[in-house]
Amino acid sequence: MIRAYKFLMRPTVGQAQALGEMLRDHCSLYNGALQERRDAYRHVSKTSIRYGMQSAQLKDIRAFDPERQGRWSFSSQQATLRRLDKAFAAFFRRVKSGETPGYPRFRGVNWFDTVEFPKDGDGCRWDSTPHDPQTRVRFQGVGHVKVNQHRPVAGKVKTVSVKREGKRWYVVLTAEQAQPEPFPPTGSVVGIDLGIATFLADSNGGFVPNPRHGRTAAAKLEAAQQALARCRRRGNRRRKAVAKVADLHRKVRRQRLDHAHKTALGLVRAHDFVAHEDLKIRNMSKAPAPKPDPDQPGAFLPNGAAAKAGLNKSINDAGWGVFLTILHAKAESAGREVIAVDPRNTSRTCPRPECGHVAAENRPTQEKFHCQSCGHTAHADTVGAINVLRAGLARRNANQA
Ligand SMILES: [Zn+2]
Image 1 (cartoon, rainbow, N blue to C red):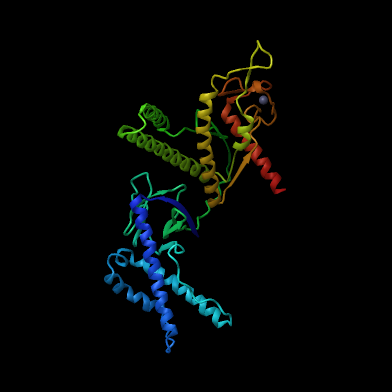
Image 2 (image 1 turned 45 degrees about the vertical axis):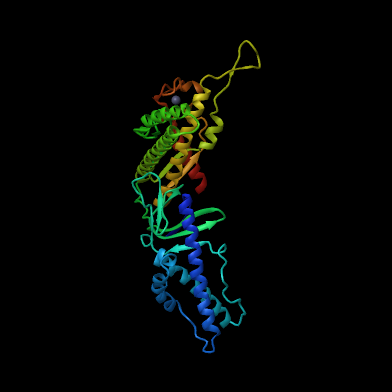
């Protein structure tokens, strides 16, 4: 399975200039090769020139023009000659079938916007600084260019292309991903409840803690942000503080991603079916309740915890969203089923099948569940996960019916 990825590049001024020169020189190579084919075609002998003949000249062209053509990757130049060859092949195919196509045209430098590298590692290197959290791609004659890698690349990178769109530069990758083997069925089903104190609770009574270093990193990040706020507008100190904050942000993000991958893989390996709460519905139904002011009917007291809770909530939401995206992707490639269910009442319904009593009083504290009808007690998050599983299985049965 071949997948394509497109990422924005953030070249330095010098690199952007080099990229522009790379396009310019590939464009002139393309046009020069086109000219040669034209001249030969118009000659009385009606010679047709093939890719192999043009490619064989590359060595001399590069040696003759070391400042320009000699500067770029040989393979990328071959790819450009191949593009011209394809244009001609299409032209002759249409001529043969009786059409009157336009002869392949010269490209203006502004219309030539792509350079291809047929093989990663040959004139280019994806992820050229693997030990740095900042992703880079290296191009011969340009250097290591920063990349905004907004999603992971799965599989082995095959081809790499540079593409210019307006003033922006992109790197386009194709990667080959082995067809994933579905995991063997386990006969097991599970419900999960995403939480704050622990990352998640499952319906079997298990808990997955939050990322281990998460809290330390978050504290460091807060300190770094405060230090940044104290800096003057310009200067070295500020630049360093900005870099530090960005660095810690990346670190936190990386740890969270890593943790999410491990947790999702564990669930998908162990269970055929996973039910989780629908976060969109949950966010709507769990908005913090305003406190009515007893002295002034109709007015509300400022909700003291709201500001801090809001921040924590947004951090958690982001983490959960990432986790669920990964969970769904892993489940799909492993042939597992994941269902999102309406989370309302999952934490206040008694999980004992013969009871099922629903009451807010069933949950006296954040952690405790105590059924007011049958006396059943359990960890509240485990109860939530059990009810999520039950709702998920009901939905699955309804879908299958
Ligand atoms: Zn009960």
